[in-house]
Image 1 (cartoon, one colour):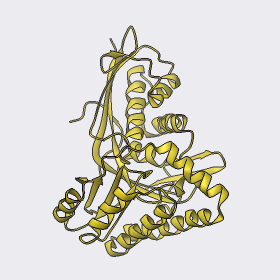
Image 2 (image 1 turned 120 degrees about the vertical axis):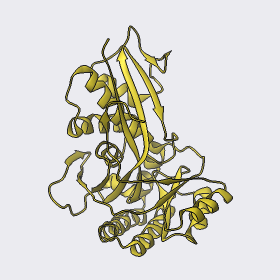
Image 3 (image 1 turned 30 degrees about the vertical axis):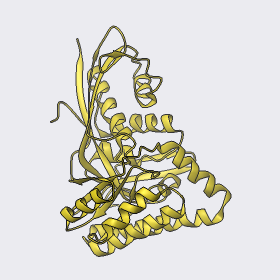
Image 4 (image 1 turned 180 degrees about the horizontal axis):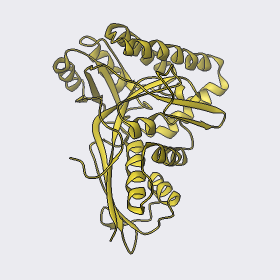
Length: 312
């Protein structure tokens, strides 16, 4: 019986979420929280040992369909809370694509997995950029539509938008994630911003401003200028709040972390999920996040992307 395992990391967005959907710049870093899956041949479709038609799991369904697989056993394990803004669905798509392709004897390098994983994300959500899947597939750091040092890793085009994705070497920095405990679906939030942008020129200007802030932030990240990067993260949070994708729980954690951080902002789609803080005082940030109702996590970056085989 053929079987294979794979894993992929989650991520957080340093700058540029929502605006990246429209071809604006973004920067994301992979984190040391992973999604793992093992697949094996089966006489019927099983998800974690239970028969399932995957109707409630469109990401998985799209990956299996792309590979012409119907009957298979999938066993999953995740360090990433669903709907937390930490790229759980992208990590799922990347890991499952890699595992299925490996089981079938197909190539499963980064460039083989990225298109399939992004198609699964887009098919499930109906909108969105390849930022999350690129971070999960490549690992480390990725920049979208920023000045690259060398050739892009890959270029993806869809619905009139183009995303040139490149490797970003991020210097060692300490980030703390604060999870609100509120699950938020990416698709509806991205669609809300699209409607706002389409009917309001002010929202379009905000999206453009997020793009400008992100370009400045990418430069600050390269130069290890934490003060400048932190200020731009805080500015980005205010712009995202104007777009209506923050909320009282996120704002409470961002404001609480500000005292001990260079800067803080929501990460991901918003509407709940998580925030991040760039800090040299992670213990104080964790403490204040707990006091204000969140769950803190100190995350490490510079981690590998999708890979076949068992992981701890």
